[in-house]
Image: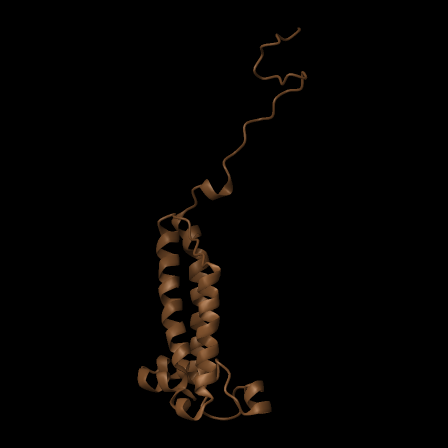
Length: 161
């Protein structure tokens, strides 16, 4: 049976029109449990790492490797003292944590805030996209560089672990 030229299911060349497309996966509703599984998986990994650091004291030698930069040059990298600060935070001693690595303590707080935003937005089914422009990345790099230089100078020794 010949088809009419005005049949909407046929393209102009006589080829059948493609089937309607499904919505992108972004718009498919997932259950609450599936939405919060990624942030909870990250939390499980972070919690296990913090538990290990809380149980194995980094102030005692032999448990963790020495920072390669410190071993080779005697200079403190931006992460030097990070394990000691995590140990102090895990044991409820924020003053010691800040003395070990103040930048790491700020990083722990920022991570906790970003993770909280992530889990709340994921639980509500909202997109979780945090983008930083180049200015923010440059500012973060400058902050880390300034912190590293100051903690290695005599007047900034209070920032050294």
